[in-house]
Image 1: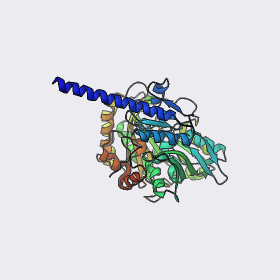
Image 2: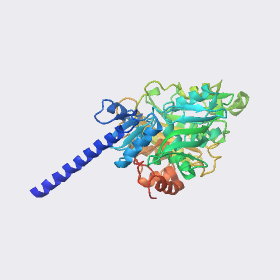
Image 3: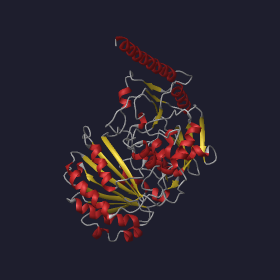
Length: 494
């Protein structure tokens, strides 16, 4: 017994020594080379803890092997080569908004290439704009507006980074007119697993270009995206129907959601349709709050005609609207576009579901029966947000990019969140129950609302559907040693 114990201890000690030597060799590699302007943080660095936790979701934490902040693409190349040489999982981070913290690896021991210092921008006379991946959505909207009043379809949170948003879709209020953000991508500059810097477009590296738009993080570090921007629409009408001044029963919210769904499904492509309901801090968490909001990209006369019966149909909601230019309309729904202050963090967990047809009356009843009991009893905050899809998203061919759900009518995002302190212990199980009440057997979900609790079979089907086989084939071609990997990255095999 003593012999076996001694051998086991020696084996464990040897493994620790090898791991330590490997880490030291990685750090030496990251710090070497003719270019050395990158900041390199290791677990012993003064800024490591701040950097490793600079993520929106505080519910979970992972400790990377190292975090690097390159300034130029050549440094990204060098760092990727180091990770590959020592078989360290390599991931990119641009905004830190991955719900599962895949931007810091989704596990301990990854090499994080944080591109937040890479924020250059240029635009030519044709409206073709180049953005390095360190830009955030607020930066992008502001820079485009300031340089010719150009626009792109993208999400509404200013702090979200370009990297993940473009790589996995990029839906926002203007998407029903202009498609997903990555539908406007004309080329991408990307560092591959062997450290080469290449360009992917419709005419060069076409398979890679397809994969980068829908599953990009599994194939490389995109350092720069080129977009075909659009002129800003001349008029944007912002609207809201809120119920914050009234107390609604779960049954009332259910009935209003059925009415709102009829409006949403009949809305023209020029209208974005967003709904949020939940147990929120704005009503002290004692009842289900409800709000509808969105934008209309057309004339006031047409908007008034479309919404003429809303006051009566959506009673007792407070219906308001006002006319903006593009910038004012975006601020109305996003808040300030500035990202020069620290974003508020919170503990959270999310699930999502793409509806491919109208939610039935039975589904609404099942959901609000659950929320009226378990939802109001849950000792924490939660919300459900739904965005109407269709329009410009659906007009693209189903296989135009790796995004697999162009036939969706709407997406539902379920969130349990705690702005102060940890998430309640039953937060995940509560949210699982909420989605199950609406759809017991979900087949489609949005990867940008990533759920780390899904099994491999579930996330492959729900995120990528029939596209996964092709994505895996492309992975074998461009990253045969699986350098870019995290818990839900595209695998080498189906």
